[in-house]
Length: 103
Image (cartoon, rainbow, N blue to C red; front, side, top):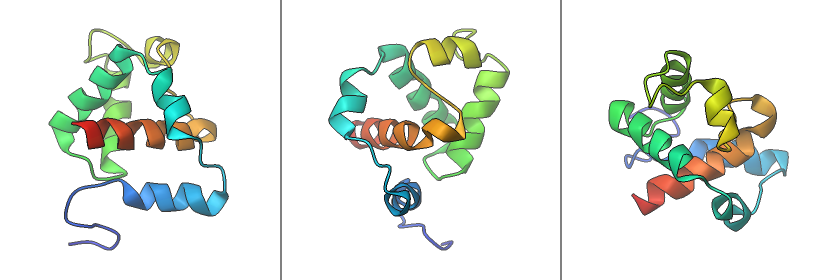
């Protein structure tokens, strides 16, 4: 098992990065505004590649770039609240962690 992997396939390494930056966002605020399409997109990507980071992020980018989920690309996914930009990575990670925890 690689460094930072907890055997459960969590994105906890990403959470630690966000905590070090001190920019963590309240998970309730992120989840209250979550569009079901964003949730379904994340679950679609999790089913394709698992939950290990950064593989999941890479898969999300691949799927969006090739419009494999409901023909939605970066712009459409951004419209439902899912950002791929590094400036918003903390919110994206919180969203992913919450969705994975809920199953």
